[in-house]
Image (tube, rainbow, N blue to C red; front, side, top):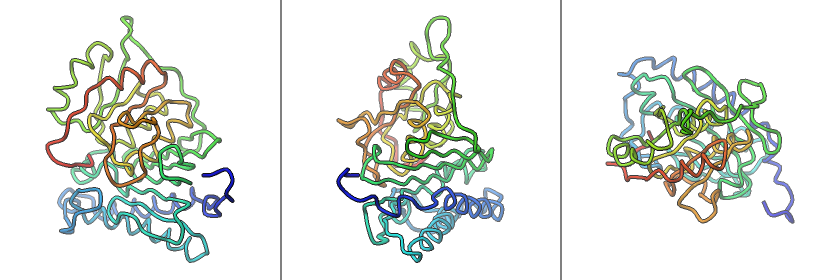
Length: 292
């Protein structure tokens, strides 16, 4: 936000309350569609992010947009950027609400644990401009959120993560990787071996980034470009926890746009040295576009 402009009223909305109500709606959708047979149903449409839209994706997005419409009806002006609908004008693009209704939708439809609602609120067009971030991991039910200048929180408790852990030979103990196709892992392995002891592939960029925020993993790297909607909220949670994030294809490390398009890989860590190690991991185009 330009320091010379007035603070947009929408920036001060009760975004945590909005996200929590949307999260309850998403929990209900998952309870109503408990099996893989129900969750794999497709709408026949392709979302703005490039993936086939599942019925549960659309239903989840509808829950979020119902909350946004209430805010708009109450007089607030903003725009929304969502994986399925793209950019939706609610009267003013000075505040952007960046939504991934289900990050880790492959996990969700296969019944695997980690899949998340991800919502970020920003007063500009890039990752650096995020002012509020929220990630709800529907598997363990963990709620991650952060507000600019106020730190990051997990289930209401402030995050004060420990430092990174290294093995006796100096390697990072465990890191998370995303966009983890077999081909991408094979091409990255020579760069991972010297600096990493163990890897984990969770299947959700948002959730993997949150693990860095709590220092559950010592670093994270996507092996291909991630979309703005996938990373916007969680990268901010990492930064408010004291961690470091870079979108390595951008001239400005936080200059990736808040969009549905995939512009850059993302890496995160607790220290500059670990972030540099993650940034050296090579990236590989996927066999087909996928949100994980």
